[in-house]
Length: 129
Image (cartoon, rainbow, N blue to C red; front, side, top):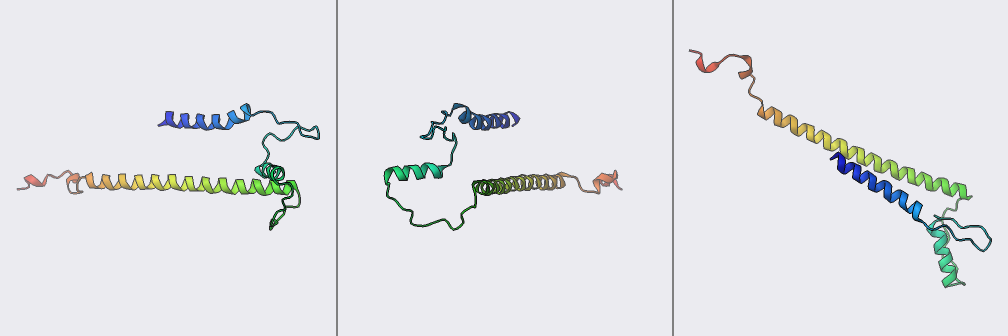
């Protein structure tokens, strides 16, 4: 079981680190500044839309527009933290629930297998003439 967990952990680390290492360096933009290596999908989609249909106008605007990029990053980080907290809580609750269920089953099995209390007193009732 521990070997399997270590293999899964190693796979997660590799899946996290390898894309960072193997990713191509960002291309230099028209302003001479290299682009972001891991930019958001929003910018890529906006670029693709403007390339496909230069006269495209969005048909709605966002309900809430962050005041700056830092606030947008803060909201994104808050969303990620809340999601990670929810997943961590769910995993912890699931593990605890399973452990308690296993302990209750072991306790119930132990009570069924235990001899009655009268046999534990040391008196042999079969020869009580």
